[in-house]
Image 1 (cartoon, rainbow, N blue to C red):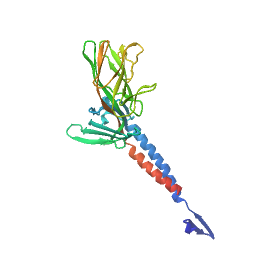
Image 2 (tube, rainbow, N blue to C red):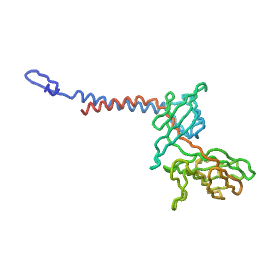
Image 3 (cartoon, one colour):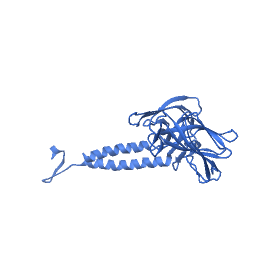
Image 4 (cartoon, rainbow, N blue to C red):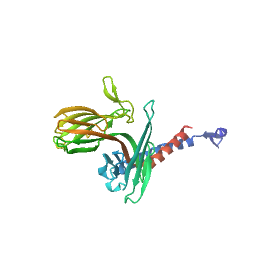
Length: 304
């Protein structure tokens, strides 16, 4: 028994042997570690926050609640706990495989400014390499294109000018979006599709055959009428309710081209890239990580 690592007790002309203390100890640590993981998750749910923001390259992001597109607080998280910082998106590079069109690398260069703008630091954010600021981590999640347009009304006045983010629909970044010009007289909206590398398909119209903008086109359907922005009913910034509007034109534009329709014109000035950043403050992650490590060690001790 002793040669096989049993604990042996000889007493009153009897012998008893047992082993398994390490196994039971590992089992005990495994279950205690599960409790630690649950406590870490609960701590994050109570005191953490998660937010997302879509930003065009060249824009600044100030860490205030109004800068987020979506923001979720934990039960005990307060606005005053947001770290005071500003980041500027300097450059975004995307590399794709020319044979498979699959993404190979995404790189976002940013400038980080502290609260009083006295210190500027350059950083690089990648998909698996977030930027850490205190307890907040900034993750690079998605990217796409923002067509830059200039909309003029019937009097030639600029009713809308600037980049409009479009949502990608496939791996080649064919994107859809809506351009709304409520200040035009009359109001006008554009249901649009952006293709980075233009091609025609049998039965499917315009498609993109590569994610990079090698031959960009902006395809537009022009609608005139009430956009419904004054009704108080929330609506998506990427879609237009055309049920009470009249279609007045269709056009495919290259960068620099202008489409003149009844009541105004739209110019496709060019495009820029946007990125979707995820901001996570997860104060319980270290406890959850420690619990996971202890759980694995306890499980190994229990099994072997």
